Image 1 (cartoon, rainbow, N blue to C red):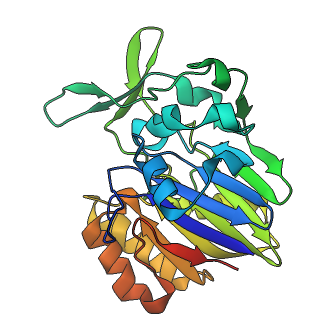
Image 2 (cartoon, rainbow, N blue to C red):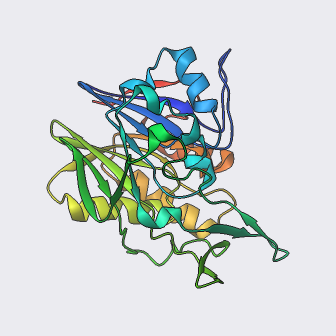
Image 3 (cartoon, rainbow, N blue to C red):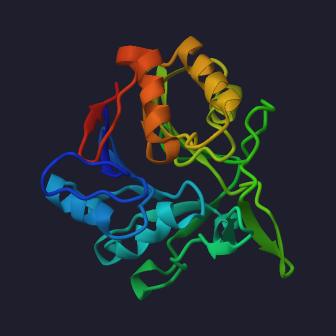
Length: 276
C-alpha cells in the first residue's frame, strides 16, 4: 500500500483545513511513514491533527531544498515525541535569496537551524547523490541538466565568500519510492526542471517504470516554450497519475489537466490519494 495525503499546499476547499504558499506531504508505505517538506509555518501540523495524521510516527523527514516554504514549518515538528531523522542536502543550509525585477533581494532561506531545540539536536543526515534512506525509499540529489529549455530561474541567489552569486539549486533533491514494479516520484519545486527531474530518475532506475508523480513544477509565469515542452513530455510519458502542486501555478496546472485528462489530479489540502 502506498498513499499520499496533502498536508500543505497553496489551495484548499475543505472545512477546518488551512492553506498557505508551501508544500507538505504525508506518505504512507506499508508500515513506514514519510514527511516530505513542512510548508512555511505550522499549517501542515494543524492540518495533520485535523486529518488524524500522527507526525510522531514518521520514519523519516525529507526536505526537498532550502527554501522557507518547504522547511519553515520544521520548527513545529514534535521532535520530543519522535525519533525521525531529517534527510537534507548540506547546501540547503546556505543563505538563500530571491531578487525581484527592481533588483531588490529578500531572504528566502531555511529559518530552521539544526539543534534549534534540544530535542532536534543530532537529527540531521546530509544526503548526496543517490541515498537509500529506508527500504525501497531513496533521495536523489545532484540532478542533471538534460534539457536546455529548463534552466534554473535567474531570480535565485546564494552567498559565497560574502558575494551574491546565482543559485543553481544544487541542494535540490527528489524523493523516490518503489512499490511493486513501479516508482512514485515526489519533487518539492523542481527548480532544476521537472523534466530534468524525471530524466534523472530514469537514469538512476533505468529498468523500472515511473508510474506516479506529485510535484511543485515551478511553471507559474514561465515562458510558453517551457510550459509547452513540459506538457508535451508529460503527455507522452508512461506516467499513470500526475499531481501538480504548489508553485506549478493555477493556469499551468489547469492546462496540464486539460491535456492529461484523468491522468492529472488537481490536488488540494486534505486530499488522500492511493498510489499503488
